[in-house]
Amino acid sequence: MVIIGAGYAGVMAANRLAGNQRLSESIRVIVLNPVADFVERIRLHEVAAGSRESASVPMRSLLHERAELIESTASRIDTEHRKVHLSGGHAALDYDILLYSVGSTQAPDKIPAGAYALKDPEDANRLRARLSQLDPGSTVSIIGAGLTGIEVTAEIAEKYPQLRVHLISRGAIADSLSGSGRHAVMKRLSGLGVEMIENTDVQRCHDSSVITSGGDTLRSDCTIWTAGFSAPDLARDSGLPTDALGRLMVDESLSCPQFPDIFGAGDAIQAAHTVAGHLRMSCATALPLGAHAADSIIARLDKRAPAPLSVGYMLRCISLGRKSGLVQTVHADDQPRRFVLRGRLAATAKAQMCQMTLSWIRGELRRSGSYSWPKGPRPAEAK
Image 1: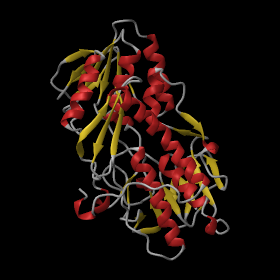
Image 2 (image 1 turned 90 degrees about the vertical axis):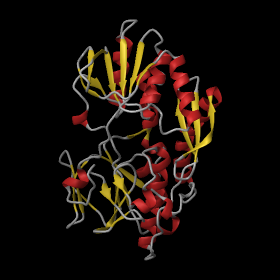
Image 3 (image 1 turned 135 degrees about the horizontal axis):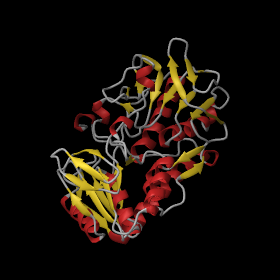
Image 4 (image 1 turned 180 degrees about the vertical axis):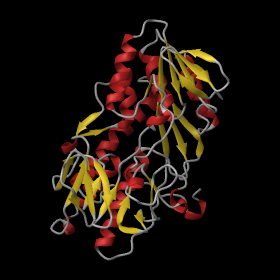
């Protein structure tokens, strides 16, 4: 059993499989990851702003002792011979069952030269160094007003009140929230002195400016690009079925129909829309996908039909600096409810949820099958 990728989905799946007592003598779990640390991507904006020293956690503190960790990167999956070829001259890995959980990143070709990204700890540390060098009155522009863009904007504006912070969005800011939720976000950002620029598409940037699609040039001494999604090319380059974004196509059980010994979990897959059309990129999605993929693999080993995926939501937790936050209640299909929690209490709830993600992974390490999650909408309702 080879698991490619040790993010939220991959580690959860590894613990569920390696800790299964009934299979412990018959299954060997190998986890392939480029580094020996687990990266809390949900904390990278804190590192970038200087609110937190690191977003890395030693992998062995989260990964089951019966799961073998190999530090390397997969370069190709050979489906004919069931091998994973590795970069750097390492010997290929044989597999009987493969879990594809390589995660997502920002598309490098969509990040303009001169802009800072926020896809990994190296990016976060580079941005942190740049922010610390800016003179008072310098302008920081965040491009993209998804949840990542909103969180990094608030974090920087709170940490560096002497800087001018702009949040530039192609559409309306926080438009996926309820009316009261959007109002709370806008009020908090405004209170931090953030200038919000909506319905503006940025085409390119230079060292001291950004240029919009309308031809306007806006000053920007530090430009942070949070827009754009990219899946690694591994699945496409290996001849596996992918969607237009390069994500591995899997069915309702998270198995690849053309290659039934390959399963997928996390951001780098596209599951059947009947069960996954409402899913968004988040650890609240990756953890259940990893656990369900493990359950489907166990069912396959037991010669049982795997169950279809069912994942739902209850909350969206957004940090708005260290002193404030927003908790938006949602329906199972992630559509917003009316109730929101805001302010310091919401910031505390957000911090606790970040801590819980590691607690759930460690809980699965101690007892396989312990992790559970909200069920999703009925398949007919999944969009």
